[in-house]
Each structure stands twice: as C-alpha cells, then as structure tokens.
Length: 199
Image (spheres, rainbow, N blue to C red):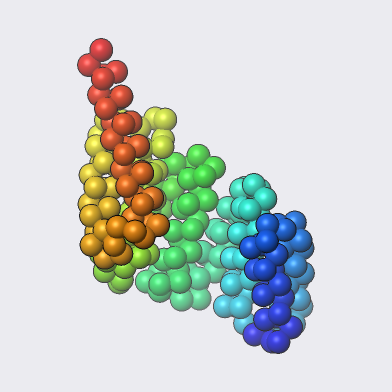
C-alpha cells in the first residue's frame, strides 16, 4: 500500500472511531476510487471494500453493506480459495449482514456450507470458527419461522460454542459474554415455542 493509501486508511478509521461516519464513508469511497484508478493489487482493493462495508453498516445502510460484503467474499473466494482464513472471515461477515437484513435462510445456507471448512482448516477453537457457530445459532433462533427442531439446534449449538469460548478465550472475553446472552435468549425462545406447542 502507498503512503497516501495508508494515510487514507488511518483517516477513515479515525473518523469512524470518532463516530463521524459520513466523513469516514467519503474517505473510504475516495480511497476505493483511487485504488482502482491506479490499479492497486486486488488484496488491497478488498481490504478497502471491507472498510467501506463497515461504513455503510455504521450508517444503517445495511443493504449496501451486504452487497459490498458479498463482493468481498466472492473476491477472496476467487483470489485465495474457500479454505483461506480471509475467505472464511469474509464469508462470516457476509452471513452476518444477511442475518441483519432478516435473510435468515440465505445466512443459514451459507453458514452450513462454510462451518465444516472452518473446522477442518482452522480447528474448533479458532475464533473464526467460534464466531461462525455463534452466528449460526443466532440465525436459527432469530428466524420467526423457526421450528422446534431449529430452536433445539440453536440451544445445543450455542451451549457447545459458549463452553468452547469460555475454555479458549476465558469468561471475561466479549465474545464469551455475547454467546452467554444468545444462549439465554435461545433457551427463552425454545421454552415459549414448547409452551405454545403444548397449548
């Protein structure tokens, strides 16, 4: 990355951290345009696009964020193959965007495809694999059309993942805390569904 590109990345990140999201978006859009004009390597362009997707998300423009996340995932898939950690990370980011747009079936399908790859390549204890399983549990219990089996699978997935995170990351890690909250919520959703089914 050029010195100017590095400076633009730092400026965009600083503006985002200061909650100046419109300004951060302008910087990141300009950075992407510059990178394309000067034929920067594809990996650099994909990194800029990831930051751009974050800016769209920060502004609540989730449809645009999802489209960029999809492009980044497909870009890494072509450049690095499905087993590369960057590809797996961006696949999970894309699934997260789909979930936030309530496109649960698409997110579930993608996560079912990539979770076995992450387990095989990175191992059960890798943070990418842990995040994927957390997202998968969320997708299952967030869905208003979830069946009892879906909710039971969500609880089981989140129980196992929370135990893994507690063992690997410790109880104080934010990801472990998030898993604990999702586990509680999934158990509540399951209890409500069971009660309604019996009634």
